[in-house]
Length: 112
Length: 111
Image (cartoon, rainbow over all chains, first blue to last red; front, side, top):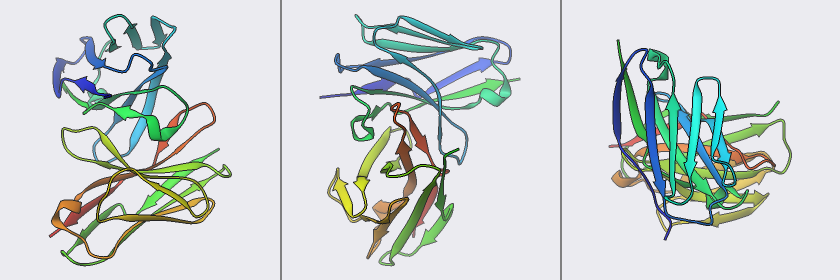
């Protein structure tokens, strides 16, 4: 069956880089996403990558995909206190929302 | 632009009382709509989805039900709440590009 795993917690110092990791099991996944959830709020799409890509960069965010190991990572450069949130990895093999599989989320704490 | 809203944002209800959480989407027509529940330390669990008015699919058996009386309205209900219904509920819609957009969430506490 499908499963997405993430470490539950990560702490970094302000200004350092954060790397949030995710592993998935469904090799047919076509789309992989990173969502951010701030306290008491809904999820906000941060970025996504297609399975035929290895890397995607968007300002401070870099997504790396290793299809062979089914490993996805999100790197946040120059982490700020405003980056403190829960980050969810998600995978799907189509465009239908009912087939999204979310990880448990990684709570990122940015220390001053 | 498209927006999605859900309310109430927080709700405290006694066991056995009814529930109604409402979600509306603006700026798009005939969206696919979803209700998720989020438990601490676990991913989002899909509860219901709807591809059109009056069309509801349930992903897990439970004490909850959903309805879609209008194109842009999605309601999550219960006739009698259980303690285990406590959680953070999220409504979402999906764009043609396959991006899920979430509402602000509704935190339900059943006492």
